[in-house]
Length: 124
Length: 277
Image (cartoon, rainbow over all chains, first blue to last red):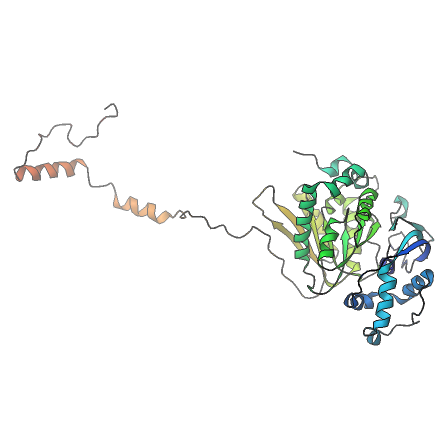
């Protein structure tokens, strides 16, 4: 699972969960695979990213140098930041680990790079 | 007629390792899937030279995702079958994969995707595989959560195999109830084999027209169309004057007056020969 996906995933499908975001991230194994840097794509998704989830992701994989707050107007042209985001969101792959719902503490395991978001009948 | 896969088992069981293998080895299946994915991509109308983020619902082995990759887009795929997702990760697709049930809703943050694509998946939602499944509720849950996770002016294109007209109605009704607008596009409606159904849904924003299906243009054949006028004028003119008894008698009389050799008149003159002759 890439951290871009992590930034969009919620657990709001569970019954009675209101927000379910951001999920807690627990990484057991990760790998890095370099891909082509596409600044337009990062610029496009930038307004949709949630900065608090970015900070959680960056802390758990050990990427440093992300500002506490994001200013959308200045950062769209900040190539260094875009490059860092590209590395964080698209190049780091979580192979094993788990996602934890912040409200119910339900654990979604990640195996072989695929998060299991299936819910049991009584949770829907 | 072949049995529909939805009737044999729920999707997470039907798409086992054997079935999943077909989607990476059988060239015919791959070809059909790619063709449908390309058409669905065409209907999606994504910006051409920009990279967008697309959700692939029922991504399976990632064949539809490959079409998106070729066009330079990022995608995230969701599927209920672990075996199919394993095939996808073996193929080393660029997109990210999630194991999930579409009937339980799309577990994404609001406004995440520029579009959604789905090839041969939503018909599975019309079946109740477990005692607590209610197809209408699952469809509604799916469409409302999907609507939420798309941006404004986004499109969602679903290729599907409806079992009957009621299924089409049920799916479109639930989709329209969830806030989408749009409808069904049928490609090649006059062909049994090539006929394909696409549900094209749009979120708010600028009102767009539903695209026309392929193979629906008027066929121009070489034949002249039937017109009633010709038939009517024929009746007005009456029977052909030539070769009637009167006409023959008149001709004979004229020959006699001219002094030419003419046969005698008899009861057989100007009569049709019998069929025996």
